[in-house]
Image: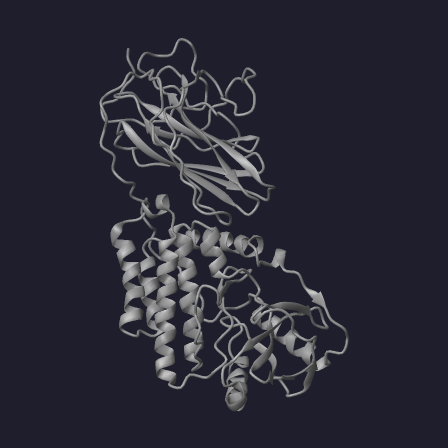
Length: 501
């Protein structure tokens, strides 16, 4: 059938659409460009065809970084057959359904959503159907709007306000799916401030540009330049790996009957969409203030326990803070047996470990890298041994954080983050080791396993561990999939702690 190009009005030959309304058929245009062919039923289209086509022409002149542009269309009764740019990534509905977001990921997605809507409003354009299904995650980590309502709004001002309310609802959805462990890592004030920005857009009809400025102002103290760059890399991985992403898109080749002008239009559009220079209205503002260490929830100390305790703290919460993958999984495990070993542990085999090579401790109380001799001075802290290399693919990095490094609280919640490179579906085994700085003994105080589908770029767990009272120790995180990698050690020296002698 023939469609009319919005670039030059020329007829474009495309295959007859098939399937239910709104079913997308990806076709390959001459010049290797990809377009989406779909049909939608529009009530009253026969009488409103000129207005609908004029609205599509205006949308076709929009900013391709904010909106998937329509390329050509035709009206057939009450059916609108539309050729548009390919979606270019999974919808936010897919992201919300499959990914337990970190608050940083939700914050950046919300920022890009507001940036895209702000750009549309700057061009006096109304989308009309902003939902999680009509916003997609692009390969460069941005959010782009698709599938605008074909009928022009009867009242443009009211349509703009409706767009703001719908965007506000989507912001709230993003914040609602933030995983529990990540939500607990930020203050309640920050959570309330983010929700307030969304609420203002809904109740006060705030324009997207104002909402965007408020959103950035709230995030700036906690989301710095490096953190933002890390989140963007995570979102880029999501856009590729999730269903509907670039890697999963099936494209149908069509014959040479498509007009050359259509190929040129698609090529020009593709060049526009490529992540090059981003206008100030779309580019995120880097934070200038270094964000403080996340505040961990306080835990009431338990009664003192013997240093050679028989189990780790119960109630280990394992959260999959995925950069792609399934819904949030939380499991609670009972007490685990503690293993004592004087040198590096292994997640793979019980073979005797090699002599450890000490690694620098981040604590100011760390000793030199040389292994202590048997004739160690009484009361002297032992060096922290290297329990494993820093990375063993697919484990790229292991990071351990704790909220008790200075207080030495006996019951301490730690966060173990395991970054993964490209991998097949696997199970990540993890441990938290306690190193006695007085006698060098190594004790496993928490352990578990986390399944990681191929789309995951990292997993995270937040166990609680019990520390011996009055003794200096160090905590080291280990992860294996199946190789073993170790985090940098965290030295914990409670006030007044010392080694006997």
